[in-house]
Length: 160
Image (cartoon, rainbow, N blue to C red; front, side, top):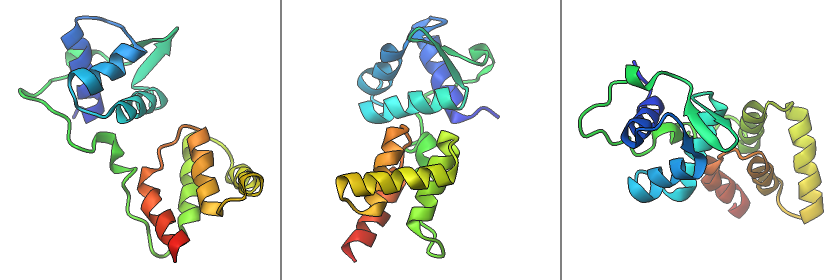
């Protein structure tokens, strides 16, 4: 079965009639032309697709890492509201601290050791004199990791 991300990518490339596409053209088509994503989410989708090896990038040009002709695009296709963001919107587990989940996500997605991430968070916390969880969100941003699903949990923790 084809993943929805592959269907989106195949749709874009088949629609354009091109074998490669400029990165800005790719995410602008997703956001401004098709209106499937906000510009930020379109950029996040592009980054996610590159990190997950669905797309490759060379000199600012994107190419699919699969044969788009093998992808069946349903008539009237439109991506689901949350496509790859379902992981982002994960529920915060009451049995573990939100900070542990944030550190785990940053560590997994960046490939960095969790102790290294923890030290970076402590440094940012001290340097900017901010809450530890907010510092963790800053570090996630530094590594281009989407942590939107944690914002409410951090807000809740700070305001309690």
